[in-house]
Image: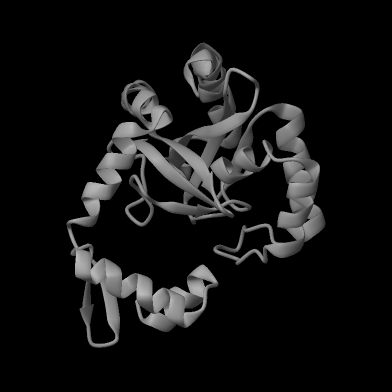
Length: 226
């Protein structure tokens, strides 16, 4: 990415971004080639340190691996980072995933993904309204819901039902089901998600096959999340 692209993505002044990027280059975490900046393998040290110290990731990675094998689906856990959902645990079953969107560190749009809508359900009413007013939804597929009032209804459904089911809104040919993971005090700290290619299960089949198990796991680990 260029300096301008990074500054635009982060909504920060170019001078601030330039200093930060040059510091990361000096530390060996990034490389600079002409106008382009890119990550170097050393950045994985930071990711590994975070994942090893984060209690949600530590607890949920083996859970994702077990669920993926049990359900024959992609399983992931995401947390909220600004107005994006970031995967901190991930496992996939052969044939269930999309090569375009997979892996720890993947950032997903909060309003167009199942994990994102579940995470938003943990915000206050004022924060949700601010997000809907501030965040313009990019139509990632022909199925992406972009109208504010329609998105508001989707979020109300998540609050009422306790889960989010998203069909091809973030990526064509892929549907996902997510439930909230609660801290001991009832605060939503993460979202547990399973996803499949559309030919492997209908929306109703996803609810019947996966939802009870996801809710069971969410309840069983509630007291272990900080």
